[in-house]
Amino acid sequence: MPFPLFHPENSAPRPLAMSRDEFTREFPEEDQYVERKSGVSGKKLQEAVVALSNSEGGIVLIGVEDSGSVLGKQLTQGVEESIHQAVASIRNPGRYGLQEVLVDDVPITVLSVERRVQGFAQTSSGRVLVRRGAMNIALFDAELFRFISERSLERFELNDAGISYAEADPELIAEVGRALDWGSDVDVRDRLEEQGLLVPGTEQLSVAGALYLLRGPEKFIAKAYVEIRRFPDAEVVDPDKRVEIKGPVNHQVAEATEQVMQELGSEVVVLGLRRHELPRLPKVVIREAVANAIAHRSYEQSGSSIRIEIRPGAVTVVSPGSLPAPVTVENIRDAQSARNPKIISLMRRFRLAEDAGRGIDIMQDSMMEELLDPPSFEDTGHSVEVTLPVRGGVTTQERAWVREVEARGEIEPMDRIVLVHAARGEELTNARVRELAHVDRFSATNALQRLRDAGFLVQRGERGGAVYELKGDLEPPAGLRLARDELKELVFASTEGGPIQNADVRSMTGLDRLDALALLSELVADGRLVRIGQRRGSRYMRSDRARI
Image 1 (cartoon, rainbow, N blue to C red):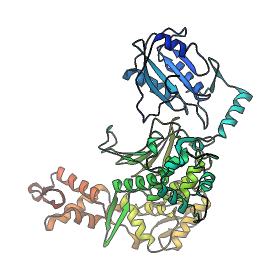
Image 2: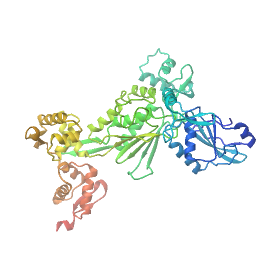
Image 3: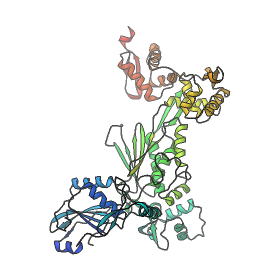
Image 4: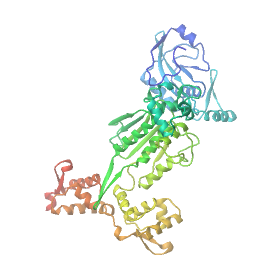
């Protein structure tokens, strides 16, 4: 065959040309590896890609009739988009590439599909097809079960990456050795083979080996990197900043985590004489989301990198490939299945991922402990998206106040949300705590009595009629207990003695800088205050109208 079955996306395809006679000799008929299509019908193209992915791979000649007559189909942007759209609707397709070929100066489009090693492909309607001769055959019953069982045992991460061990970076090999506590007298090749980083009995790196032992694995494994995109707000389509993080995958996790933390920054809250600096997201949650995306992504699905999208309200981590069976969005906390067990195992040895089965627990529990909304998970069929909310129902000021309360005595993670609602002036009952903390009656009773005995809540009434409220000496700052209009009156009253600044508002209310600025801006818009100066030097004083 005059061109490869599969073109890695990061290598430019060579322009090819052949006469009709050469074309006929090379492709005399449809067979196990070759299918003809006159156009880019989504359904038919989808079936061909699924069947070839689940078999030995092959090519689809687009612009060629079933009889072999060359009609022509130029690889225009529209044709390329139609093909990408058809393949995107497939669940777990094999890697694929596109190339234009001239047959006596008539362009046709060649879609090459690589055999899927790990797992299997399905059409958008759920059918599993294989290639038999020139036919795409659907599997059912015992045959389908046997096929799925056989394919589920194969791991793409253990495949030969096509790279010699001699190309591995010695410093990275030593780095792996330190993570695994190798001594100085070990046979390095044997140890790498045990870890799945070398193909057994060869001098070749596996896919997992290429990801850990090469400075630039993305040169050999398409899109094997992390892309960070920052968006100024939720509605904007184009990012205002884009960064690609490359290198060994363990370096990618560490660097991506640090960059996201820097982009998010911290919220600074001043309550009385105390200054609290609260990260907008827990570092362990970001690290675990990135590590899981890298370790569990489908490296066969080479058309996409891992994406981290940063918006003011949330961080979303997108990983190519659907959830591996039997994991679903519904059972993600309880079910376990590693797509790349060698990759994730070594990631844990680098202390960049939690122990098996604990990653999702850590993410959810850490968000709850910081009084942030829980992470959400979505399986689109060709990617897994994890969204980490930056803001939720609990304000930064309330989070800071809870930290101050905790300084007086140890409390349980679930107690935090109970205290927040008590600080808002609520009279808490057993039923209300069950609703807030999603616990049973017994756990709610224990929480209320624990907080009462620690001196945080005061109980009124007995048994079923008992209600609990915040103890008086724990009264939170104005920003937590006053309504918006009351806060505005408090700030306005403070200007009687002269101009004030943002820092003054933060000190008297416990609000953060942005919320204090919003409050001052509202008073300016109301015509009650005027602003003098710019940016951090701004001062606010009563307007002439407000003095009357």
